Amino acid sequence: MSNGRIPEEVIEAVLRRHDIVDVIGKYVHLSKQGHYMKGLCPFHSEKSPSFTVTPEKQIYHCFGCGVGGNSIHFLMGIEGYSFAEAVRGLAEQAEIPITWEESTAEQTEQQQEKSALLKAHEFAAKLYNYILGNTDQGKVALEYLRSRGVSDKLIETFQIGYAPAMWDTLVKQLEKRGFDLALMEKGGLISARSEGDGYLDKFRERIIFPICDASGKVIGFGGRAMGDAQPKYLNSPETVLFNKSRTLYNMHLAKPNVRKLQKTVIFEGYMDVIKAWEAGVLNGVATMGTALTKEHAGLLNRNSEQIVLCYDGDSAGQSAAFKSIPLLEEAGCRVNVAMLPDGRDPDDYVSNFGFERFVREIVEPAVPSMKYKLLYIRKNFKMHEDGDRVRYLQTAIKSIAGLASPIEREHYLKQLSSEFPESSFEALKQDLSEHLLQSEKNKSSGDNKPFLWNNVMNNRRAAERKTTLFPAYHNAERQLLAIMMHDREVCLQVETQLGDQFYVEAHAVLAAYLYAYYAQYMEPNASQYIAMLQDDQLESLASSIVMIGANHGGYDQVIEDYIREIKKYPMQQTIARKKEEMTQAEQAGDHRMAAQIAFEIITLEKQLKSS
Image (cartoon, rainbow, N blue to C red; front, side, top):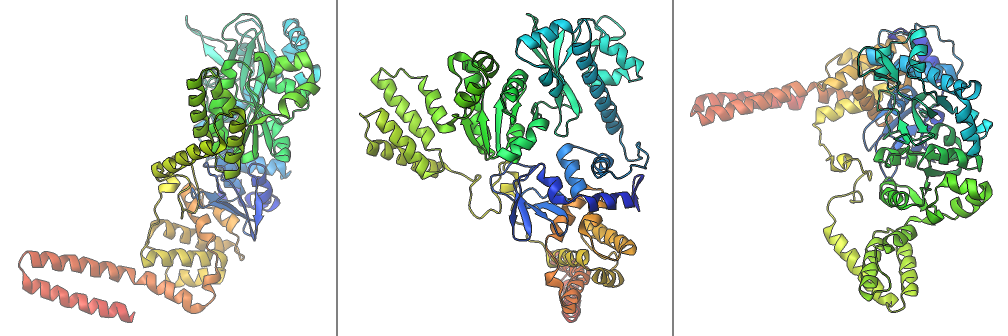
């Protein structure tokens, strides 16, 4: 067997050389729970961990959204790789020789385009970096960066470059190297000329900041104008590689420190991240001029517990921070906000006061989100007027009521009563209690509804998923497949007695793959078996079934009972159909036919009982 043109032995070696805990641990914070590792699912937003990794079987499964598979499937899902790309990446990491043809039969046109665009982006980044540091065109930009405190070391670390003023510098270089210019336009590197044939560079006369994906591959660019050109910042458009809503600048470099510290500092722009890096803030990322999204929040929550928002100190920056807090908290993050004085931005603060003061006075003393929210909403009220003071207190109490912790609620109430002595703590507490009571009355089905396996925030899809009661034959098939995945002898027994006689289509397919697997391998291996499936739905189903385990199949009688239950299903269907025919005959007034069918039903039911 093989997958496309990738030899089966390569897939086996890749799975054998990469422990699934190590692979997933680069993306998800996992904690040990008995024989399992658990964490927050990276494929849907949740507050309580339902994502389970089983080291013994080398598989993962999420009980919230149903995804599952092995290390290869995880990379396909988290990075958007094809099967071949995921295998290739893992093979390279393990220094397994890549001997199969790169252009496999399974590669789609989009995957080939993606590969070409990645190569083109990598080339463009090197070209822009070379122009900045080694040409006359780049001298002005280089001097500008140095005047802003950006050292040569930072330029090298972040691969900063310069796009010259000429119209077609990159176009000519891409064409010279055989890149398809129409594809390069589609990938956002160049633009079609409006007046006729040909292309021109997307970025001109701008300092260039390469934007990388989680593995460090260049997927887009940000270009900053040095003069008065507008827009001041220009990003690559949305492409097959680049999605602003899912990408954070510098995440690939910051991730080791983010995971180590369990803290991420979010900035608004490239320069803020770069200057903060020089100040020793090695866990900084940026949203690249776009508002924080749910996808960003989910990515951040998967990698760290605490978020520090370090946005510009002007009104726009502070408003953006205020709006970002609920998104991050809904994703499960603990949020603090850095307070920049006098409308300054982080880059400006570092330039004026130095690296040490920036860390000591801005990043480290970042205030909890509730304290920031109270300070922010306070600006909307005239505190010297009694009416506005009362309205501020009412608004503040409403915000405090949103806190889950009674201790935190009491802490902020005491602060308010201390700041506004005319309002006693007891009066404020009574107001808070009324808010909480009203919230409880208004609460509909939601994220913290009891008796749910998992608390999710994924458009409530998982929360609304009702428990399905499957018929007996369906459950018997699932239980039997679970045992077959763990026991070759049982699988051979089932193949002899049932063959393809599974009545749920997906179960029949899984059984067929199991027969094929055990025809080649003597020992059960869930990860290797799932690698054969090459179908998202089958992989998820298989991973959920294998999690059932095989302890329920310790006796021959249990296996026989499951097989018997499955074999009974056709007769059960026949009886159900006969009952419908009998009802139709009675309604038509044909009592003789109804009596004859009733006799047939009794006979079938006796046979079913004795089977």
